[in-house]
Length: 120
Image (tube, rainbow, N blue to C red; front, side, top):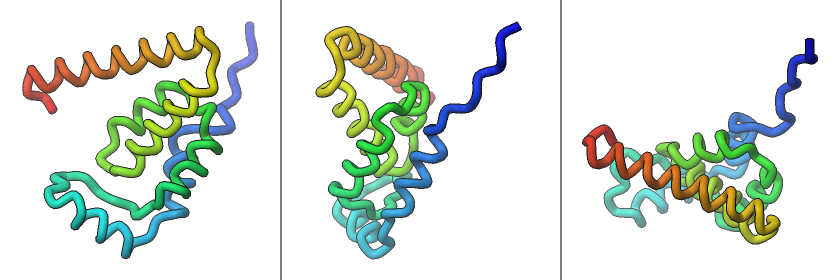
């Protein structure tokens, strides 16, 4: 019987925690004002520079964890997911780029179907 897999040293929860360390409540309030109608979005107030730093740190985050970030109501978590995907696409091999594009296409289609069914 094979040994159970050990948990990944990086993951969704750790990425969220790292992002929150850079949060700035005053900046979060400005972001909320800037977006005018943020709906149910929440803001942490993380700068772009800090977001890129966290993205570099979590560039090997598994795609299911990236997807969780993409579905978040927290603006910076979605931005982190996109920064990670951008990094993976720019630095990855041709095969990895293909996988990244397939991932995005599947995500987009699933979200479109939810919208059309009115479940979003």
